[in-house]
Length: 180
Length: 177
Image (cartoon, rainbow over all chains, first blue to last red; front, top):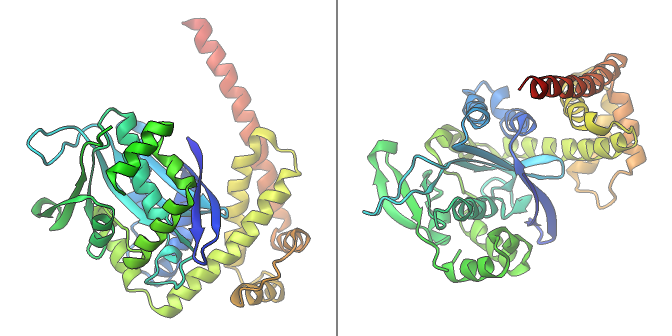
């Protein structure tokens, strides 16, 4: 899958990027440049997480992994599970579960002002919802936000279901059925 | 991301991703990400990464940004240059190897540090006068060793030969079935 998308540069210009299936090249970007400084300072290496997930994607149809590329570098990564998760609502409808979503460090305003690009996270979230529609789940998407990221999902109008003790207290968010 | 906007988009084109070509949507995305400091991470598996990113010093953050710009300039130039090599189906595999080699060379002190310093200087000051493709190709030519060229040639050759062999295998399997 390859789909051209548009994002904004930190200074507000429209930039064209590519939303595509994740591959080894994206993992290399994550390892060598996203985490380059951390690897250099002997921080624990979590590369295995994406590597393992990409491996799962290649072996099991229920997993899907995507990346956003701009300027020949990976700007965002997302990993989805599409068959086993259910809504927190009593109906327990199937949904797309967002296992992992991250933007490159240079796209985070906390680190870079202005950031290199904006819209990476929201484009990936929108694509998760699109996949849910394509799979017949009506746009239902679930995820656990990391501490400090909850505001992003609130602002994108996901419903919060509170802390989940099974996920180290991370807040669970869900999009419901998209009425058409 | 209100349901009304999404519903209208889905009804119109059948694909929510078409919103990514709407400037109003893009500006709203920028505003939302600005408000939350660009913190968008989700998923328990990324907890450590998220914490590490939040703990980066200004100096570390600048280092990553500089590396990103340098690599982006070189990789863009590389892709353009490789387009003229006429590699066909072997392009992506060769490109992936070439990128890896560039990263290796950039991390080695044997690389012509004067050229790199000039590149870094432009990146550092966000020069409005970008390097020309000719200048980037000249840098890449300095970067690659004779062994690197051999490695890339081998990657291209292997990529093509594996496609031929896979086609042969697929045909044999289909005949046997």
